[in-house]
Image (cartoon, rainbow, N blue to C red; front, side):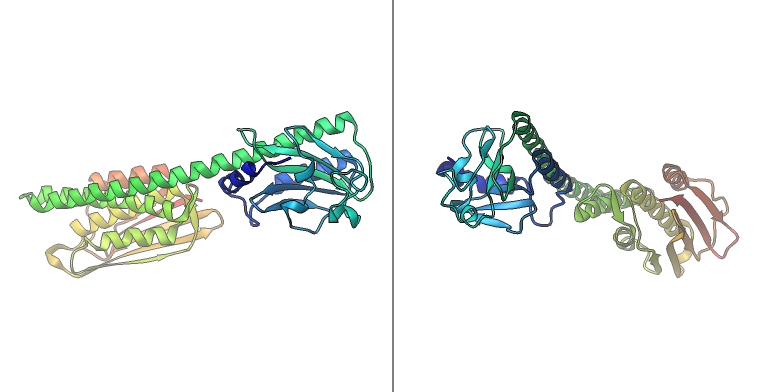
Length: 354
C-alpha cells in the first residue's frame, strides 16, 4: 500500500517534471499502445499521483481523466517495485468493492510502478481490460521494462527543464553584466579628453549593447535556436538611435522572419558597424541625414539585408576597422556582400541563406 508519507511528497515530484495537459507525450503514448498490444488488452494508461488524485497523463481506450486516490485500483494493489497483476478484479478482495470494478469497466488490471531515484512510487504504467485474464511471465517482465522506459523519458524531461531554468538564470546574469560593462564604458567616455578616445569608447559601448540586446532577445523568447529578426533588430536600432547625431534619423523595415541566434548576432554587427561608419563619415558639418535598414526574404531560404545612407558617400569602401568587422560578420553568415558607392550616399547589401 502507498503510505501517507508518499502522498505528501508526490506533489513536489510531479511539479518537478513540468507535465501539463499541453505537454507533448507522443513517445509515452507509443509505449502505452505497445504495452496494450503486448498484453492483448483494450485499455492502457500512464498515471501520476498527487496528494488527492490519480491523473491519467496518457490514456488509451478509456475516457476518465482522473480519479480520487481512494477510488483507484493501484492504491490497493501496488506494493514495492514489482508489477502488480489482478486477474479478476471482481473476485479479488482487494478490488472487488471498487466502483470501476463493480460497474464492469475494469475486469483485469496490471500495473508497473513508476519509481523516482529514491524509490518513491509516484505513478504507474497500467494495462486493463473489461474481462478477466492472465499474463505470462514474459509479459509481466516486459511491462516492467516499459515502465522503466517511461521513467527514463520523464527523467530526461526533468533534466531538460532544469537545464532550461539554469540557462535562463545564466542569460539573465550575463545580460546584467553586459549592461554594467556598457554603462561603465559610457561613463569613461565622458571623462576622457580626446575626441578620438571618446569616440572609440562609444563604439565599444554600442557593440556591447548589441551583444546584450541579442542576449535579451534570447532570454525573452526562451530559445537558443531561432529568434524573431524584426523584434531583435528593432532593439538594436533603438540602442543605436540613442547615440546617433542629432540631425540623423534611422528607419527599419524588416520582414518578420525567424533566424538562428548566430545569424541574428552577425546581422546586428553589420547594422551597428554600418551606422557607426555613417555617423562618422557620411554627414559632415552636422548636416541632416537618414539611414535606412531593409530586410527581405528574396526567395525561399534566402534573406537580404540592405543598409543605406543618404550622405556624402565613401571614397574607399574597403578601408577601416568597421569595414573589416562587417566583412567578418558576412563571412560568418556564409553570405555575400555588395557595395554601392555610386550614390547618392553609400549602401551595402548582404545576402545569405536562412
